[in-house]
Image (cartoon, rainbow, N blue to C red; front, side):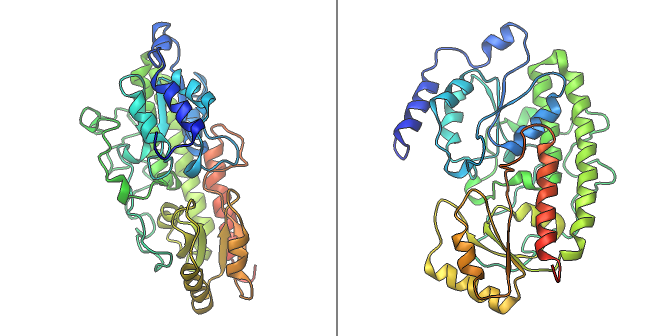
Length: 352
């Protein structure tokens, strides 16, 4: 298997050759489906929907990055039992497309970038960009007070999902050109609300016995996300115009949701370290543009950020797009968004 480590290839081979029908034993016993989510934020959304019914399994544990994750044989065994697998998309979990192919017809695979109501953004080109390059301006595209997602077809009040178009969508037909779209879709709470609705819809289909509970849980979690969004909007308002640079371009959805002034990233892809030209461009941007803060990430070497900020007025802090230090469970997603907002306000506030 070209491009994979020996361990990864062994794990994938074990999955592809597994003799059991994935999830089949669960449905035969009328048990709750085994649900596997790749990363902690998506696991949190699934856990919120499944509360009181079951607990999803988490694939990428601890401080591991989904961008360069090495699939283990134990992961293959976990996926072998799965009835539903939730992942962001190939732009984030590069190890997953081959797995998804192996799961075809055996388990339901949900790429959240393709979920109804999720609004993907194009990948930004280059390491330096203008702030608000894709900003929607204070949530112009969704009305959080109504909780309705009026323009994306989710009506959380009646839980009917009549406008989803699930029959046409295909759940895995990969309608978007993933190569051109930013895969970090969970960092928009509006997208997260759409994902919750989709997860509830799929679980209700897979487990009709608990369908009402999944829908009720989704409605409660949606309300929680709406309140979270309003709180974070107010918290970030005072620092919206303060320029900053991130380690890798994972935060476009967060920036767009709250109208923030991100102006560059150290690297577009954390698997590829930046060259000398990128470092020079970013140093110039910090000097010329009054960049207030440069954010590192706990999964990657912070020395590059130190190189950028040394001898400048820019401060440094840490952002974590996947919540490595958070306890898995339904609280992890609100805690992740809250932590991002707090890190930004602490570092970007004038005089901080």
